[in-house]
Length: 304
Ligand SMILES: NCCCCC[C@@H](C[SeH])C(=O)O
Ligand SMILES: [Zn+2]
Ligand SMILES: [Zn+2]
Image 1 (spheres, rainbow, N blue to C red):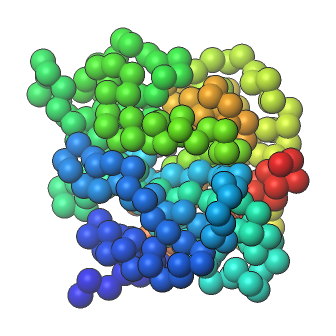
Image 2: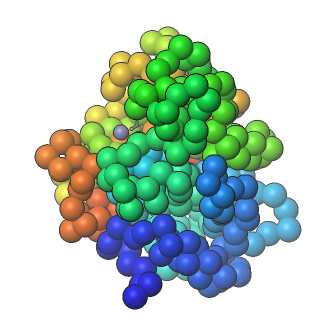
Image 3: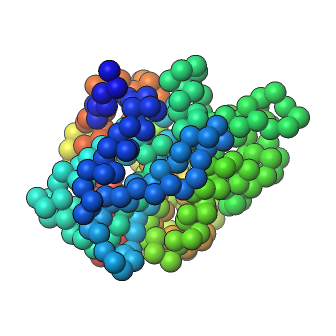
C-alpha cells in the first residue's frame, strides 16, 4: 500500500503523497509552494515551516536529494519536517526557531533521478536530461551552478557540469528561488551522502572564504553536537581541501550571492555500505543529524 514511513526509503510517489498530506496538516506551521517542474515534468514543491506571519521572517533553506542515489538525504528532510512539527511547543529550541525564522525544505531536489534509482539504476547520480550531441544522459546538479563553473567536462562523466550554467531546470528553479529571497535567507544547507563530513565554501578554489574561521567553528560545533548522541565521527572543513576540489556547487553559489552560513553535509557512512545505507540506520542517522542542524540553526539565530 501507499504507506509512507519515516524509517524506510520512500519511493517518489510515496514522498509526493506525503508532501501533499504534511503540507496541509497544520496551517499554523507549514505550507507549500511550487518552485517549478523537473525535466520530466514532476512537481518541485517547497515546504515552508515556521509560525505563520504576515511579515517576512529571516529564513533557512535546506535541500535534500540533489544526487539521486543518496537516499539517506531525502529520508533526512522528511524526518526533519516531522520532527519540527511534532516538537514545536515542547522543544524550546525548535519552538524558538520556528517562531523567529522560516525553514524552507526541498525534500527531493533531483526527483527524476531519485525515481530512476528506485525503478532502474540504484547507482544513478545525475539528472535525467538529454544533452544534444551525446547519447549519455544527465548533468551533475552539484556542478551546474554559477560558481567556478567548469565549462570543460565530459557528458558521460558522473560530474558533467552541463552544457551551460544552470542548464538543468531543477537547478534554475532553486537558484531563482534563492536569488528572489536572498535578502531573507541567512543559511543554506544541502544534504548529501556519504563520508560523514560537514563542508563549507569553497570547493571551486582552495582560497579560504572571507568567513572561513567562523564557518569552521560552526562546522566543528555541529560535528561535536552530532557526535554527542552515538559517537559518530564527522570531519569538518572547506570543501576543496576536505573532500576534493569541485566546480559549480550549490553551497559555493549560495555563499557567493550572500548566504553566509552555507554548509554541505555528507551523511553516513564512511564506505561500508556507502549509498546503500541500510534502512535500519535511517533513524539513528536522522536523530544525530538533527543535533547538527539545530546547532547551526541556533548559531544563525544568535547572529540575526
Ligand atoms: N560544492 C561541493 C561540496 C563538496 C562536494 C560534495 C559532494 C556531495 Se556527493 C559532491 O557534490 O561531489
Ligand atoms: Zn551528493
Ligand atoms: Zn557525496
